[in-house]
Length: 130
Image 1 (cartoon, rainbow, N blue to C red):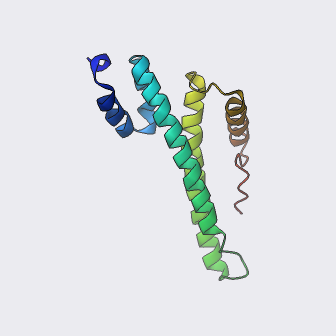
Image 2: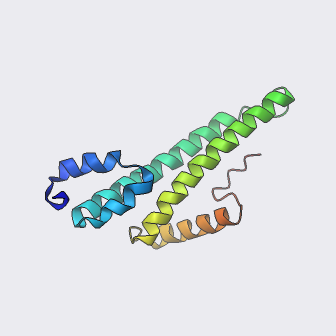
């Protein structure tokens, strides 16, 4: 039944699927695979953009211009937020890589490096959140 839905409906369904289940539905057929791939790239880009926004929001908070306790609280908050977004983004990237959705060699190399950095406790995007 799922392999007979119009593409427009598939797009709407795929957009509502959580990250953890997204790649699994790509197994239905080629149309679903293409829609899941498109949605995964979109989510990957959204995570990257959000990480950039969060990093920019945290820049005004330096030890010199806020109270020490406030700085620690704000810094911890931003670090946790970026860490969560990074984990979500890397999850999508890893699943895409394992399911053959990444065809560009440069993207493949970027993903493999980022996953390696993250596994060893590094900062894959070189955000330098202190």
